[in-house]
Length: 361
Image 1 (cartoon, helix red, strand yellow):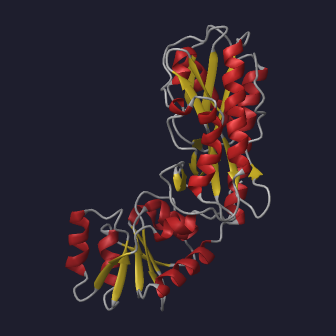
Image 2 (cartoon, rainbow, N blue to C red):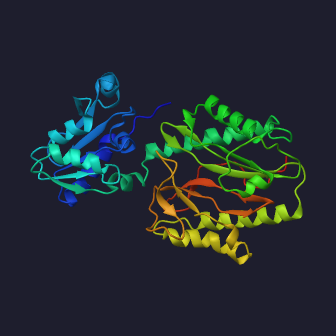
Image 3 (cartoon, one colour):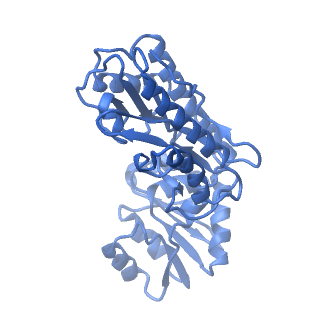
């Protein structure tokens, strides 16, 4: 089910930002930002937003029909040199904003060559800042993406697919296939399947290592639905859990609960990271938690806000974020527990519903 999102409302929010910054127009060239503002999913598109006057969407002849369907409410300009065409259309704008984090040095020179007399001004990550707070349609897409991932893992576990003798690669491929069969348009990222000592590598790539009884099995994966990504990690044990595994798991579980509890409107992202990290550090494993606590998730698997000791900013209602502490013991194994959640005015909404109790298969 594809949901028609409020692209016009998003454009109005960007228009207000542009007006506040004293801009006459904004040229959006990042394809995901173009999709956010228009709904277009093709491989060549740009968008010219005017503070006053009509907006303009540009693409090339391959996408004329698609643009008519996906962007019916914006005037269309068809030109293979899409960005240049829209930049020329901005002639007369006193101050034109552009995405400096996307435009290359050569690209900027190209803009300058077709916008003589126009002041080019970086808008930095203005659209990404808008994207950080999800609207109701986006949250719904995220819920559905998380539900696909939840169900895929539950089905594999119930069918005995997570068992000794299988390889990480085989498990990963089957998990990916199941998410696609359940309605995902794609997987969110390269699925991580890590068993035994490999589970101590935070972003291990699945290989021919076989699952063995008594080992940790770490699964980090997600589904993409209507362009929105889910992200979840669960760690389980095959066969019998040793005391050290139970202890490490309980520590990460406590840390993850502390991080979730710290998610609140107005909370500093460094404080959220600290609430979770402090639990692990107090147990003497601070050096074994080697990454940030979490990140925003939406049209990209990693987007604003970043939740870490080096992060900046505060949380707002509607932000979709992950909380994913881990303890990694080189040569032995590691545990990560990760959820996707929505920050609200009250308790955060949990979107990944698979149990976080230690599962022993």
